[in-house]
Amino acid sequence: MGAKKRYFLFLFVDSLIVTFSVFIGYFILMPFFSEYSLAVLGVTAVILLVNHHLFAYIFNLYHRAWEYASVRELISITQSVTSAMIATYILTYLLFDITFVRLTVITWMMHMIFIGGSRLSWKVIYYQLNGRKSNGSARIKTLVFGAGKGGSLLIKQMLDNPSMGMNPVVVADDNSAKQNMELAGGVKVEGKREDIERLVNKYGIKKVVVAIPSLSKKELKKVHSLANVEGVDVLTMPNIEDVMSGRLEVNMLKKVEVEDLLGREPVELDIEGIEAQVADRTILITGAGGSIGSEIVRQIARFQPRKILLLGHGENSIYTILEEVLDNKQDNISYVPIIADVQNRRRIFEVFEKYRPEVVYHAAAHKHVPMMEFNPKEAVKNNVIGTKNTAEAACHFKAQKFVMISTDKAVNPPNVMGATKRMAEMIVQALDKGCEETTLVAVRFGNVLGSSGSVVPKFKKQIQMGGPVTVTDPRMTRYFMTIPEASRLVIQAGTIAEGGEVFVLDMGEPVKIVDLAKNMIRLCGFSEDDIGIEFVGVRPGEKLYEELLKEGEIHPEQVYEKIYRGRVSESSLSDIEAHLNTFMGIDENELKDMLIGFAAQRAPGHQALEQINAS
Image (cartoon, rainbow, N blue to C red; front, top):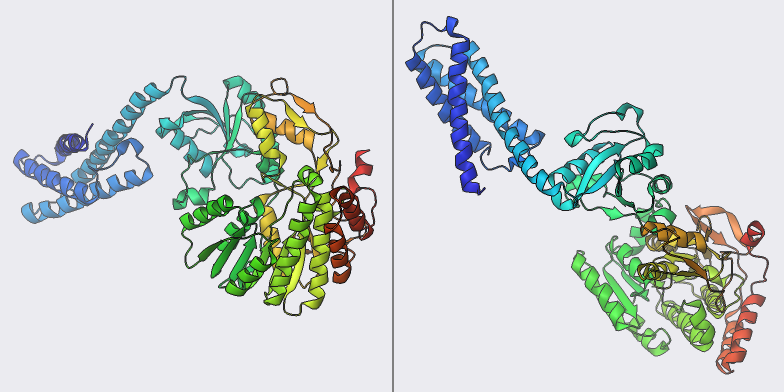
């Protein structure tokens, strides 16, 4: 029905209701009004009718979407009806010098009941008509976990918005006081989290929505394990504060991903410390188009630097992150895309001379282990010489901080990538000794979920193609961290650096790759019978178990939450440079062994920490 037709319909219905309310009140209280004529009552009805339409216009009763009415609309009806009755009472007293106190009360009650009832009827009729259209097979039976404010809002949205395609049939909540309670639309709370699997089977549930945005990662993992029945999707809703503030819609549901299950609780950052280092300064991020580099760009932008230099070798990746940050329209931040190769010393020094960055985050690196086994000289040029060029430029032009992104593969490195990153750490430590005005540090962490070199995108693609999912070895174990968490901790480590440290991020518990594969298969709605797992053997240069520091090389106390200070051995810059010259002048077949040998001599090996436990 069009807005104009709806307006005249409500105008007509309200006129009947007002007139009816006055006369029904009169006949109910007739013994008390025998001395007053129906003519006086008719004039009173006309006055009330005029007042009702006046205040209905003021409180906008004729231009509301009553099919979505809530408490707010009920308040508007109360305000409008009460105002009309008060105005009518005053006018009848002035005109006829009489007071209809009891009639006014009865009329007000009838007025409220019928006006409110007419609007409620509109909502019921709308729901019945539209509900029947969408209550077929298109609407998926859904279980909502959480009977609080978030769950109630979500259920109402599902009922009012058929386009969501979800039919809430049952609720689960751990609060005993909420058991058997009915929420919007009569959806009932029928159990706690341990009852989820039973309820899924009982009602044929195909979607489970976790409607407690504040639920911890640990608790979410527990709920997911109970709800992750074959063929059932598990989703989460956005933070309720974001919904109430209008930043997000309640129906912006997100499927639970492996990052949600392996991720940990976010660290509270030292906002003041980071702002003191970053705000109103020029920040250079190398490898800004990569997974870690681009996330550092996003995180740094929150602290309002004056300028962010996006440096990268690939124009497409730099273009992508530039477009993203420009779309966000961060106030007062100037973004400068710089296409440059960290191997090109002259170009890097030109960039530093032109822009004079005060803080440098060096994320540019070759990180793919098997690829670097086949290209050791390129690994040295990019990871070692590239780091040396950038760090020396930072020292020469007196940047305040230089933070290098390192890796757990630098520990006991059996491969080219790890050995070159260990050499890069040595360069950072050695340069820090001679740079009085620049603080240089390295930050070491393990695999990041969802990065370009992570197994997660590869597994997703294999699952989409019907499998099999290829895992190198059933014993293969890795530490994992989400990209945002790693980036935040890198920024935080930079603020607490005193110079020359190798910071190590607490990666939590190691995860077996085969278990990760099984989780991802289930998250995609399949079983291991549908998508098989195939073991293909360890690739060149890979270790079965990763370490973040060798035994005895980590201070037991945290310098900040989830950040430790390492005690790694150091080498002189002249020693490193001498070996670099040797490496660049020999055959690649010899280079691999010499490179790994050099890194191992500077970092005496021992058994991987997890090997003993695993065996």
